[in-house]
Each structure stands twice: as structure tokens, then as C-alpha cells.
Image (cartoon, rainbow over all chains, first blue to last red; front, top):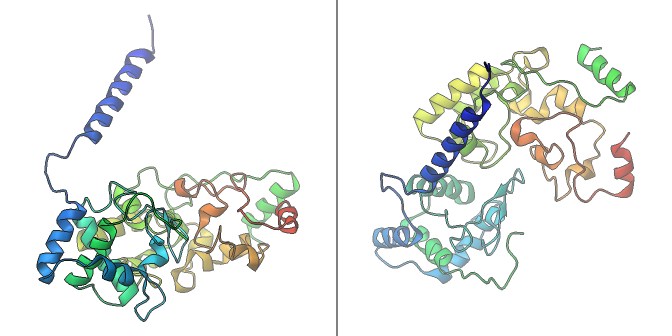
Length: 150
Length: 169
């Protein structure tokens, strides 16, 4: 007579883990994702002109009257990990070439544009500004000529 | 002299580094269940601070002013403010050294925090590997899991030899 039967429990736990892993790797049932390409198309349409990568580069690296630029936290070019300018906390790379999860969740994209534009510009960004930055980020290759975050 | 100070001194005298963390709610350990949104929303920018490090009044003020959060806009939608606020209230610090709200509701301005870190030179706080007193993980390797024990520390990168020697004082 055995009081404890660890093996069936272990198997169950292992199976649950596998199931969870499979579930996590499957695309979500609700196709609510986005991509940098669709974000760029959306904000270009809103702005009435296509995003301008060179303009986005300048915008990304400029301080707009405040203490921080986008690059203060995300690095320049943002193809490597960033670092929060206030707390030092590591930030995942912003450029999709270095971070496949970047710009895939529309709610996150909206939230961080809202928060970060207020931090850098003390206002929300215009559609044209978003389109420009997205064009810049979408155009970043996998072989940056400068180091990542700094 | 506080009981905690006595325990710290006693532990130091005996060469013991650790004080067992409080596990019950209201203590300084991380609650067993942490809402994923707390990690997602708050720990994007800083360590997921255990709610027990601040009193309920401080958390209330923080959650009421997320759009002006220590120089950053950390605004959330109203539902999340409510649910995370309730969790923070339920697990806020209730033990003696946390009952008083610190200046600006900053954990790092709490009397106990300043006392615990009083021997750390200003240069150390300014190291690129530290940068900010809010960057707990620079030394407290278990900070993300709410572990701040004295035996769970590492030296931040960039200490001078003198500072490295002082580490063991």
C-alpha cells in the first residue's frame, strides 16, 4: 500500500507543462495582433503621407525641449537592449529586427506611444511623427554600424 | 534602539548575514500571488517592488497620480488602476517601520532604507551599473523575486579596490 504516488503526479505536471508550452507557442485565437508594417501603414494613412525614415531618425534622437530623447532609454540605433534613463532597468530592443515581439500588440503600442511621447515631448505624438519613427525603426537592418544601447 | 537594529547587529556579530524575510501579508516579502499586470505594467520600468515596502497611504497616492509618476507618465486604464490598486492595498506594509509614509512616497527615502544603505558611498550609487537607488537589482540579485536578504547580494560592476574592501565591513 502506498501513501504517496509521486510518479503519476509528476507525469501530470509534465504534461501540463508541455500543454502550456504548446498553448503559449500557438497563435492566439483572437487575431488581435499587429506588426510594424501595419502600424506604419495605419499612421501614414492618418498623417496623409508616408512615414519618412530620415525624419524619424532625427526625431528619435532629438530632445524636444525636455531632458530625454527616445534614444535616452532605447539606445541608438535601438537594435540592442535599452536602459531606462531614470531607473536603469533593462529594456528589450525596440527595433523589430532585434526583437520579434516589438510592435505586435496594438494595445501595448498605443500605451507606450502615449506614455513615452508625454515623457519626451510633454504631449502625445502626432500621426506623422509616429509614422516617421515607425519608418525609421522598420528600416533598421540587422547589422548596425554603431553599437546598440548606450 | 529598534528590535530590527538589534537583530542586525546581533547577526553581524555572529557573522550571520540573513534575517528571515517576513512571509505573511503586510511584510516585506513578495506576496505569493502577483498579478501578471503588476509585472507587465510596473516592472517594465523598475523592479517589481514588494507592496510591503510602502504603507497603504503611499500606494494610494501613487496609484492616484500615475500620469505624473516620478517624472514619467505611467498612466494605465482605469480598470487596471482599480485592480492593481486593490492588490497593493491588500498587501501594503503594516509592520512598524513602514507605517509612516516616506517623503514623496519613495521607498528609497524611508528611514529604514537610508539606515540600511548608510555606508554606501555616493560614488557607488552613481556607477553606471547602479545609476539609481531604485535599481535594486544592481546589488540585490533576487530583487525581481522580492528577495532582499543580506546574504543574497553581489558587488555591482565598477567598484574601486577600496570600495570592494569596504563591501565586507
